Length: 333
Image (cartoon, rainbow, N blue to C red; front, side):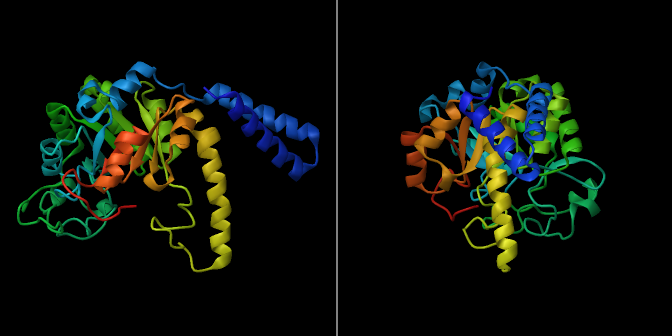
């Protein structure tokens, strides 16, 4: 539920912007009232706190002080990302959960893959929209990995295979959905119906609010999270400018401010999320407290050094996503 401060900030900003644009108090009041009515009618409530806590703070995390250690793409530094080998290695190396990316083949099979093409991770090339599942099965998902000899011949798994393995190993699953809101919601709803244990052991995450809203429409009992990196439209993850054109950069900065404001004051409440996944450089004790007051857990990504992990575990006491459970590795944005 919105805090009083959130309500004041949200509706005051809307009222002020409309008033500046229309110079009409009547129109400003009417449109602000419409937004309020929209939120009341169409927002999804958060799932029960007890259910969200089972997913985000399961009892098995006692050894890590209650903090979940989540292997990014299954732990892409320690094994080929988004593969069965990665899931098994993550479990063996002490992860309490895995973050897995959902994509689809040309014939609609839900699979694990981060990119829209197979070029970066396999010995194949081309977009997934042109690859059937049988064609994908001929590729080596370990071909481009630093430990390719150890994992040679690893295949791209289906969503079903990955889910069954995670359930078997008692790993919490962070389903990361990049797009395809309707297809993803349908595929995940089927998984939850087939494996009800997922309601208390998994969370659906996305950068795209539409994906999360569609998931809540398909199944309002699923725990969900929004993913966010401030300044993502105007800058790359390492801070460099995304566009060489200054006017375009400044336009994107304005959109970044609007998007950031929307995430913190509107979208989280509209979607009824239970967690907020944020790039690690933007998280502080005050930020964790800000979301805790709203019943939302903060999860940091991607935390790749021992010092960072210690800070997240002992000082911030929040879950984090990492590329490796074994050693320090390069930053990942």
